[in-house]
Image (tube, rainbow, N blue to C red; front, side, top):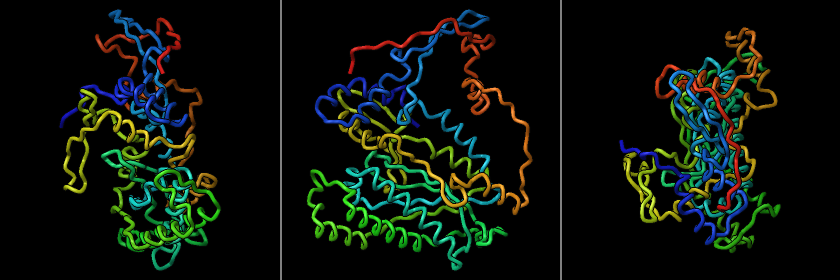
Length: 393
């Protein structure tokens, strides 16, 4: 497999971001994201100088931006989140379910991201919990985690939600655990139909409450007759719902979480070239037997596509529902464990706050204090490097 050779989204922004900002009107949030990625792990943010106590090797490390859209700032955050979720996992199978919006909705979604992402989350959680509670399917209250993704491999709009769902749930009287029959969850045809109906009904209510905006190319949808015609046509579209067979218990669920939780639009290792105003990157063409291909875009188009996936400020893209809802998760999980005969014993915790280096080593097995040259000594901080302001945009 080809690799990027160290090329990064940050370098694309540094080379071509100024021209893009001059020629496009960007939101304050998008500008903030671009700036954070550009200066991540550079002298602008400051850092520290370390020296090996064995061989004397000197090394400068710059601070990270910690922006959630930055390809370089997600690893430790992802691992810490997964570690916390380990406490919630039950000794049961888990299913992977994906709900995708039809592409015809993309222009409307791009102009109303927060409102329609909220509708998507609500439609998905209500579809899963309602069908699971139906005795025809499971007859129990399930739990799940929904993770919003907005991109496809080509970086274009592709709003969808990945869910990890318990393969069973609590009975209505909360006295017993009801397992899925023969490792089968709910028919995707049934989920798709209910998901479609719920989303389009909520979309109509959203329109009636004047919660949507219709600028530029979707201006015509502001008229109620045109909007209703558009909405009615969506009933005849195929709404894709995908359900994967159950994971291999807790281990499989954790592997899934690691792949999907804190991903951003594109990782740096997919970028192949930044040359003559073009950006080339690897992508998988799912319409062509999942083949890996190379796509080349003008830098301005690459930046445009990347910024399509900047989330609204403070938007929560990982949500819990049902048994795993935040308000009642601790008590509900304890009840489920008791019923399943998997009660956890309390262990004495060490309340000393770990450093990020200790966390990284414990969770990821990466020891950043070990000298990269002699592999014997320890890197000791010699001096702090203060951040500085520069005149670049």
